[in-house]
Amino acid sequence: MAGIERVVVVGSGRAGIRTAEELRKRGYTGSITVLGAESELPYDRPPLSKEFLQKRKSRDEVLLHPASWYGENDVELRLGTEVEEIDRDAAEVVLQDDEHVPFDALVLATGSTPRTLDVPGAELAHYLRRLDDSESLRRALETGSRLAVIGGGWIGLECAAAGRRAGLEVTLLEADGLPLGKVLGPEMAQLFVDLHREKGVDIRTGVKVESLETDGDRLTGVRLADGDVVEADVVLVGVGIAPNTGLAEKAGLEVDNGIVVDEHLRTADPRIWAVGDVANATRPPLGRRLRVEHWAEADRQPGAAAASIVGDDETYDARPFFFSDQYDLGMEYRGFAGSDDYDRVVVREKDRADETEKRELMAFWVKHRKVLAAMNVNVWDVEDDVEALLARDEPVDLERLADPDVPLAKV
Image 1: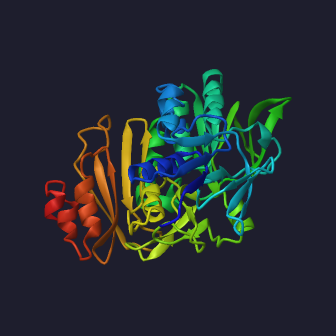
Image 2 (image 1 turned 60 degrees about the horizontal axis):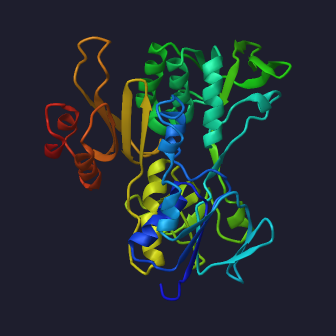
């Protein structure tokens, strides 16, 4: 795009830093300024509920780049910097101290914020979004004895696993049905429930939290609406996140469960793009818009946004992807199948000789015999075959799909 000499990126998470990386890789030689609200050097978030939380990675090991990278790549990184508003008429962002930073292209990588629990005592609970949050929770797991996790999403389950690894008694409280039920459906959500129960997690579903019980400034438990009290000296709240759309709304950009962008990650304002958690993007392979709150979006979307900024015609057509590690279970999920999108789940799994063996299986969400999404659990090096299956716009043989002796490439 001619005339772009100044790119400003709001947000210093993976999506924001990957945008700067991609611009340089694609030959952009103008100025790049990254404005980050946090004071930490940019870091990766997945380890916060996995390796970093479990002390298997240090702070330096979760950084996206060493401090020297930014100068070496002529990227101005301004940390601890709050953006107050976008002045679209003047093509400037206005900072908290009333400094005005001009742009020719603006990329919003503002991420998301954890939803909070609005009950008495909730101020003593832990949330997990930032590096400091993970450090605080890690210290609590080192000294605590009973962990209560409120919310049965990925963060909740991964932290429950970390709690059990640290030797704590763990209770997981889920307001709805099965943990992950809305993401994986009942068929595959049960797999994770069984795993955690085998590891000693007390999972309670259909419960409502009334308050967190305290003794002075010390947590003692979680009171449920039925009067039951779950003893706990550490409480983690993981009840979802909300996209940080305030800047976009204030600037008059279209917001609908995130900032609305096209298949190039561009908003209706041709000078403004959005990437990562905050972007509700048009997905040509799916025929719909979709906002996905996972690492892969922050990693892959900036390539299409950077291509658009430098004038290349590149469509973001990657299917959603996410992964999780819990105990001895590692999984990857590709594609998308909402609760009303599929008519059956096909599972291919070899019989386990005994319950001590790791689960190894694949699951496929299917409609009219077409594969919409796939999950591999402790089965690796299948991504190419899975992507090929997802790209096939034709029915498959479900018996062969379920047979672990039939190569995926020959289904």
